[in-house]
Amino acid sequence: MRCVWVWALLLLAGCASPPPPPEARGDIPVHVVAHGWHTGIALRASDIDFARWRALPHPAGARHVEVGWGDRDYYPAPGFNLWYGFKALFWPTPSVLHVAGFDEPPRRAFPESEVIELRLSRTGFERLLAYIASSFEPGAGPIAPSLYGRGGFYPSREQFHLFKTCNVWVAGALREAGIEVRPSLTPAGLMRQLRQFSAQAPGPPEWPQAPQGAGAAASALGEANTESVLSRSALSQ
Image 1 (cartoon, rainbow, N blue to C red):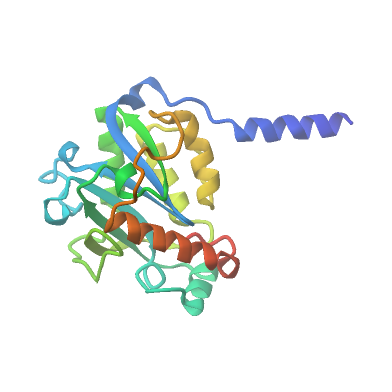
Image 2 (image 1 turned 45 degrees about the horizontal axis):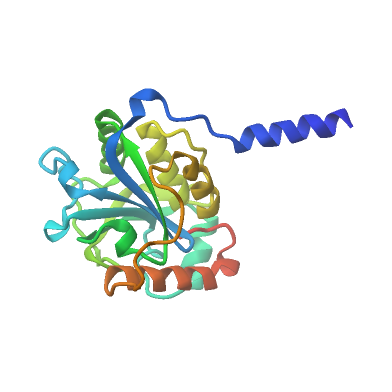
């Protein structure tokens, strides 16, 4: 019986994340968006010094920029490709960054997705940008158009594999910024941790009608990912 209680306490301890350190807290908004089985990080373009962070594209002067990461073959491919998914799941593969620009606030741009707003200090935000910028393959241009919004897919210098999915990448970016979250293979595990750090009360979007464009495309992407999750197992791209 004692072993059962010890195991239960260890599980509870593992489910709890400590609050972010004081230097991570601030007033710069950063949004984490869950599109079905994929997560991305949405940033306000006015907070980014693009002259300093040259690796980070600024799509057509968009007011917001969302960055996601995933397998180079699977992520940009339309629909579900079984071979790409199998290959990405069982072998380390090249990866890409999905950069999408849009003008609406994230919760309005993606009304069908869960969007969690975090607030970072300037120091934490710059560390987040450094993490994202370091993932780009130096000097490489876009290799495919973005799935929604204005932007494209850019080669990444990192490798994708079963234990390094988009959600693990996002968690790594947030940890670099000072948000103490654990790596999670699934968006559900990541978003569950982030709710305690949310700068906004959880709840459905206030907008009664979903806008066209980026939000509708993102919703369709989430539905397609959900339908194929059994084939991809723990793969989140």
